[in-house]
Length: 409
Image 1 (cartoon, rainbow, N blue to C red):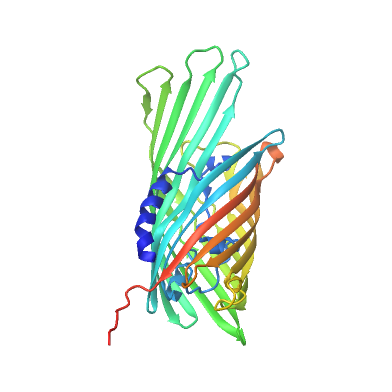
Image 2 (cartoon, rainbow, N blue to C red):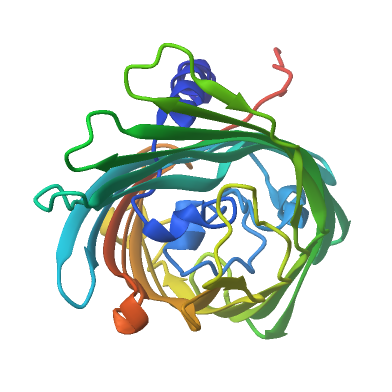
């Protein structure tokens, strides 16, 4: 079954990943946009906790996990996101449907490999300042779209029964376009400025995972991953035009070198494999250098990113033959996140809760996962925007044995 769905899914998702506008957040104006969660829905439903060496689910946050796979795993996921954007005086609603990831994991004895496509960040905002009722006043609109994606290849190795190591390489690529239009009431022609950045660059990370039994069936799980600081090359263009003028002005803009900061993630957990887990995860990231030529402002600065998450799952009886409900996995998590952005001297924070279920597909190790995430980002203080969001997510994880030689008697 897995072989039949991969090709069509790859073609569809490859198109969607370039066409989608994956966020409606005004905070996506800054840096390389709204940085996306890069794990699977199974881990996202636990607020990002990913410490167990899962044998049938991909863990995209630590390449050491690939060595624990026992079946070839193909996974794909997407989200329908709704948000209420509000200031101290007004509010607006927004909706987006996004592609989250497409990945394949392949077991190879003590080794395990994985490759796939994952959105890194999204830009998507529309800001209006309408003063058309006042003679001589300036009205403006600012639109942004695009983002950064990555393709990756990772390899994990099982050193001992409970200790894995792994590393992966990623190629980041994408395009960000911003359009600014200004018009003066009573003046016939307005002006437009279109800025485009073509972004590309390599990145590398490594990880290790360790687990051991501490009491009867109960085990301790740990995970550590580190992403090295890397550069993104941004080739920039700026086109300025006046309404009605057939010959726009193309400005000479120098390329920009952006710097993605290093990132450290540490996770600890305790539980019974394939039964229950409670875990915590801490992530720390440097400040980086993500200012581009079109998104600098005096009231903006950057700080170190940090995230704290608590989550887990419960699976009543994974091998029950009499009760289908006993084979459903229940997940939950809480998170507190400083996204690394300071606006008007306010540190922007993201606080949320997630819930999810994993529903098995009969007569297989495959499953369908559903998740919902509630949260709040930003604040209405200091003339800022607060985002109250609800995200509905869906993913499929298909498992099968590949490269098995048939035997005949």
